[in-house]
Image (cartoon, rainbow, N blue to C red):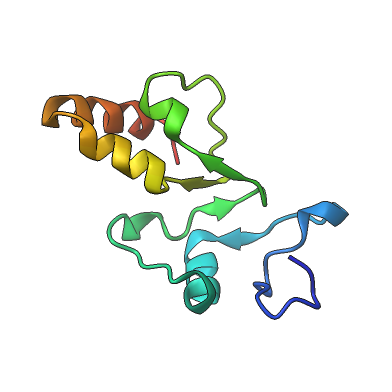
Length: 106
């Protein structure tokens, strides 16, 4: 994201130029709501958590148990692939997969 981009979030610096990130989850959601169509469904108590990296982390590997490198300061993404995977699981397996990632402070 750069300053010239109309889709930039004003408090979320461009990681490519090495600027430190200083934004809460709530600020990120509110400032990018129209561009990204974000909606907080649950976890409102975590909106004050700080995002310390502009890099995204998809949680597919963590959902299947390979959770070696979870970075809690990144934006964690459960995208369509991860969502489809979770929906394909039996309820007990789905709960186990979610518990695997909930043990991290993300």
